[in-house]
Length: 473
Image (tube, rainbow, N blue to C red; front, side):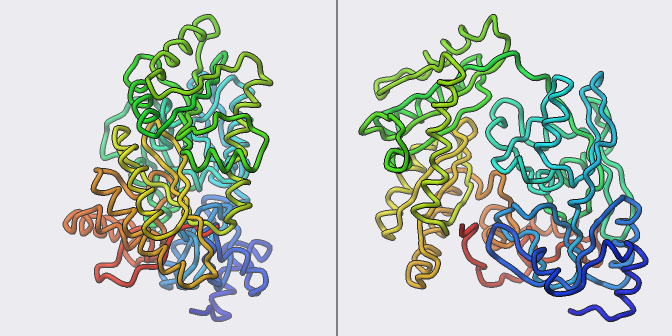
């Protein structure tokens, strides 16, 4: 669609001329995310406050103009790509901390503030906010809410949904709503807070979030454990998660990733290792050595090759350098890899990894796996060249079988990257038709004219062709 001058003039009055972009050269940077998809919006509005957004949504609803909320564009599923044109609503200027309430472990923020800015502000008062995605230094809290993105600390402290008390938002017909509470308990009404978190801007636009803060631990202990095979590592994960000390981080790296790290960096890793775990335990300094010993005991089994416990900050940094070397190694080998984030029950991790190895051989596509072992959230990386049509065709078939395998194992096709466009047409494999119909009706109640991020998150009622694999990067 295109916007006529009358509409542009109305937009300018609502948001102010300094907050409106209409020139294609200015709008293009807001038409893509980290999925490499791109589409040109007709205009970009730079949001500055709640009232402005409410007027804008009401206007777009009246005029039937698609409206796509956007943070910093770090998502990997095409969820903020304006496939129908319309208006991209950038929230990057809404960065205020509205309220800091240490006595109640609460912080109220606008959606454009970055995750790191929240962590820094919370740290000044002895707290942290649990969600810590890899892109924390750049991604916005609004984006974390849109995708329910959380990162490795989820294993102990819960997902984004578990760390938000309430929201202020604007529905698709321009009405303000407040969801949730300001307390750690509350059961009045339906839980619309958890519904909006993870909805990818398809139900309402969040303008404020009341965050639940957690006290910073006194200290941490870091362990690196190598195993001869994936089955031994998975058995260790199950044993670790079954004892009384819950690690704050429990990360998994497969054998192919270990070799990649070894070839890329100077990391001193055991030869022949089929899997590795990175474990952190946090808590009171006085009891932390005992807690780390308990986790280390659970990590011991017949497949163990090496267990290293960091004694100094330098050793901690050295151990984590191993994990940090993986991303640049992957970019060096396959800069446009396909990155998925499936989840399976912890006990099914070895079945998943062995199945992925079989698919790698079947389709002649290298697959590297790592992720959050404590909750079975594995990042599956297909190392392909998207400029090779034949390999892309093979990757589509391979990815199709990856999702089938995950669902057979009672898993889910996305843990925190979201659905957007890239996984939209696989959703019906996981969610039955009756439930999908109910979700579409919920969408119509929040957004009766379907202006908020249309054709994302849920497959259309009439199936269309698969849109392609996620996150070529």
